[in-house]
Length: 217
Ligand code: AMP
Image (cartoon, rainbow, N blue to C red; front, side):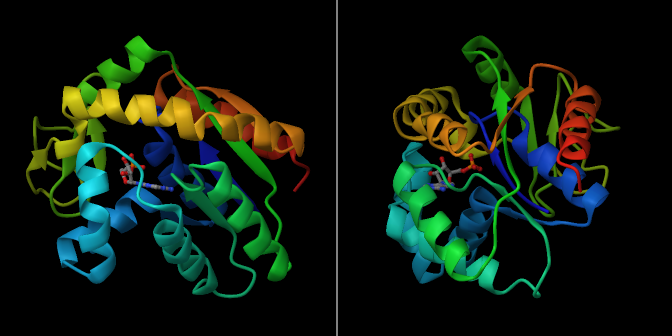
């Protein structure tokens, strides 16, 4: 099974990607996590991507497309995957469609996470990320067992620099202009499945499970 997660920042895609991957033995590839890793490592890609990530804009299509297609090519043959945060523009979606078709791979479903703007801002304001293992929490919806401490590895939780209010507004504007058109792109090719992302994570997970069961294996 090969899946794409679509939706605004803060809709819970990262949390669900991890859960869906565990349940279905898929490999989750998060473009944001990959870029943040490249930036931390100071790599060439990281240095080129950093200004775009910091401002809440999009990294140029050719950079992110090359990174993600290379990540997909590294998967063992037949390994199912779930893409979180990629594609984010129609040009990226077209490059992905072409790259997968060349490898004889098809996407089974695109899960479109719906959330209204007020909830997006509240979610992102409450989001905390582990500085070591990158696990994500939310002080409102998915709190860690002890405040500001990662359940998984015990490190301190921090707020992502691009989760600050001014950058979030930019990320939302970028989403509306450049990523929202992908909803139509995937609806037209019959892959779109809508998910109500306003529910608590367990209910979102149940909706996703029902959609995946309905795919008929
Ligand atoms: P995310 O963690 O998915 O919210 O991504 C964080 C940031 O990484 C975004 O605000 C963009 O600057 C950059 N980014 C992630 N995925 C992409 C993509 N598919 N295309 C362009 N930029 C991206």
